[in-house]
Image 1: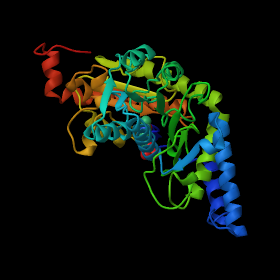
Image 2: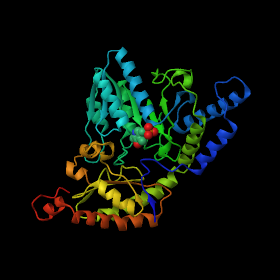
Image 3: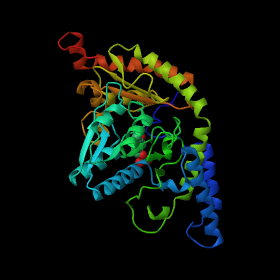
Image 4: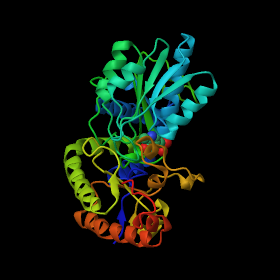
Length: 395
Ligand SMILES: *Cc1c(COP(=O)(O)O)cnc(C)c1O
């Protein structure tokens, strides 16, 4: 059996999205900026895609900017707010310690340019409160950027409450909703969101495409200069097939959201219950305020990478919270932020499931993870120290 349980990294492109993309490539291959009929037919398809995206998010079509993905949308949102703030002498930004690197590294860059960044700590549940945000606000705060849902531990933030605090204080609010879009209900007006990023490949759309919603009163800063595409804010001939595929996938995800969410969260709960039986294990993130498909655990006495390799041999495709793949031996900043000690954070496992997973697959994971964890512990000097009482168990 093979089980794909790494949907937080990317999802399989849906048949609906693929069909929409092929149709677009075959019929609407014109350049939407061309004035002739072939171009204008493509322009109509693009306008239609923008309207459908706006309808789903609860905004106007002119507030949607298509990008190359979540990272670009995050960069543009943050740089735009910083540019607006700088003109008014406001150079303070509030965010959290568990953001995606697309946000954290953009903030680092701004810090080098003289911005002050407050990274709010999260609780053991991986959640920040609206009150924390309110207390951190200053006269010179130009932006609050807080992710909707975390990609590693699945924790969901109180976005509407944070949005309200920001609105009341007249501070721009951006949310990286890459993990949330298509999985939880989003309405930018109701939730007082000024800017929002999403990426198609996290909800069964294609890679390399996303969008930035920005309230019409916000003058965006270009990251890519050139032609007048995207109302002059993002140059480059539009990636039509990808955009059309993204909207098809988003509509599909949103129209099945309640059904999928109920099904996937039941599988998630079964998986959490099964893996909780492993001694000295701990669930990462809040038990309830978490994405329907996210299961994240730490197991004491093992290395996440070895666990992934052995699970791969059994046909289980998962991920670990640590960043060893990027050449660094530092454990995940998210797991450290929720208070996991270094050696515990190294033994992490993220299983991110979707509506295509079956109960049999979940049971296959529940059967195999404990065996592999046990096998690795038997070979681990750290585990033997823990068992012999030379070191104390932390979880
Ligand atoms: C995947 C992801 C991103 C990056 O999106 P890309 O489309 O890969 O650039 C940003 N933020 C979060 C929370 C993500 O999960």
